[in-house]
Figure 1 (tube, rainbow, N blue to C red):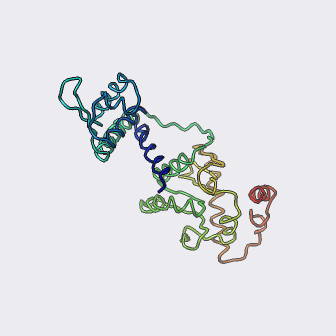
Figure 2: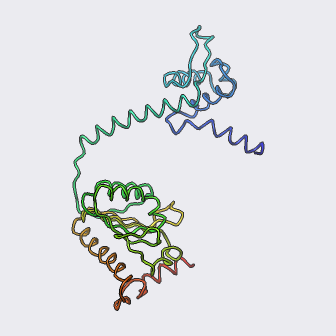
Figure 3: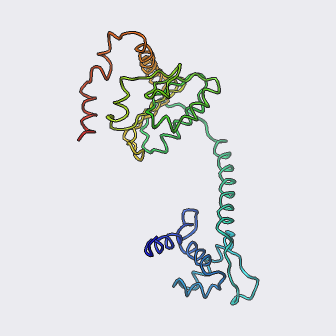
Length: 281
């Protein structure tokens, strides 16, 4: 590691606690104490170049948060010592979990789920996966999925948990290893999905009550398209379409398909050509 890299890493530690609700000054003071050991407020103010009054105020806050210990001396002789980072982070984690549980209980007490039959745009990658996991977890009877391999890898545990609960879950596989009795392998689309499609696709319909359709960038940092709805009408229509596609993929493994030219891959309509051309540019 170069001297410059070491300096940058050391400097970044000064602000490591800001994401936990500490001010920049509090975070800097805690790190300064970690580096140099116990010190008075006056000495710390000199070291970091801040007004003594502001430093003492920040040290008082750090003491209340349990990040530092203060000696029981006269006001002008008090020294401050940091608790270990491991101890501090464990304490912050326990505090967060307590507040999380309390807030969840209070919010769920007033939450009354309502279906408004509207279609919503979902724009965050984390939102997409949280919504998908919530749909899988709440499913009671049947779930249809169409996941690109990378998506399936991330949601495999949740899919298996649905099966373990006795809920029917069926979909389309694009790799032999993902195929099963209710997951026929779509060999025709394997190449399109693996390399030519401009993003990573995700489709999930739960109990014919809600559906989620999304396309993520290949590096899964951006939502290219994302739509969710709890419209029962639209969900049932979409369930029917995806179920038909799953059944068709299964049938192709055994018999010829005289209407293959109607499929997306067989007909290659202008919309598909546009998607693929956008990727090739």
